[in-house]
Length: 454
Image 1 (cartoon, rainbow, N blue to C red):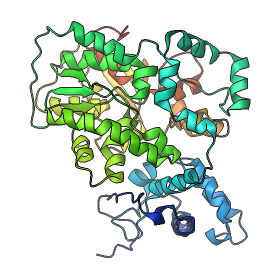
Image 2: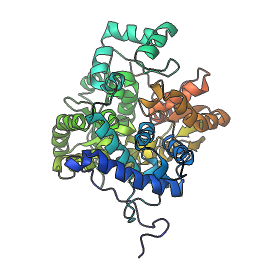
Image 3: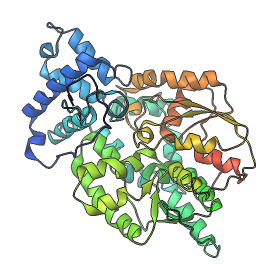
Image 4: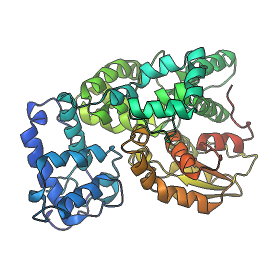
């Protein structure tokens, strides 16, 4: 079979990230590979509508003296790298030259390599280190008095202008709210109250029926209601839920920064605890798609020989993926009490690239008199990209097709499994109508309340 043909019929294959090798950080070798891949992208251009990396690349080429990649200055290669936020959609949905094709194009991991080299060189802003230190910022900002000050300040134009000039945080970007009553505090209190509940785990061929909730930084400090809604829905379905004794950031923010050593430190803190729970017969779920993807894909590619990492990879699930697996074996409660009407539903990038299908949509479609309008476009948020002064307007431009679809849907709810994507849409709508997370919608459909989780 000739793999040099246009495109490939084989399923994509992801190669391990050889980030421990010396050549990985060789900038001359990086530039050689960037030129090779940029030239392939130039001849294809299928990805032009995904993010701003590709328009940036194609503009550099089209404005060069040769109209080819060889006319682009090597220093300008970084302009493309800076626009990539590792959504992975080019690899998973557009590129016909990913392995096993002989051209072996893995654009996101090439960008990650470049970001890692940039980080090693010290070419990184204090702001970016701060924004990706989610554990440290969350612990500080969730202190009761501090959280009130932070949340109030983030709504004040004067303070936002200061953040813009000092840190480079765009004054119009939506910033997360910090909760002093974190998810871990709320869930632990609820689990203590539920100790005497007679819930015994029922396993299926693919699920244990008892799960460890990996709270995630965002789910713990910013939107603890998501975890409370998950707890209510899972227990309503006879699924036993517990918390790991402790957890740290999954490492995704630091990976997107290129700080791979910090990713390894996070791995060394999380994996032993989670792997031990897997050995004890627990499955794992997390409310944020990026965190699930980190354990499912990125850590196994960074540490392919770590058996504990692979153990966690095989035991972690997207929450709706987990529910659908149980539904296939008649273990899902389908006695819904409330219809949801029309939902404009956005599929997040980091959920799509898990290759699990649209499980959230499939579950919500089980609710009677409920219509789902799916939107499969990137919201342009990426956790930090949308809040940065130099990228915010571009991020809103990327989000515009999603925002327009939501606006035109005139739905009863709009929703995304990624809460940050939901707030990016909310920011673009500017109509004071907040998103409703799919797990909250499912809780409403079961008649379990609106999921305030206080």
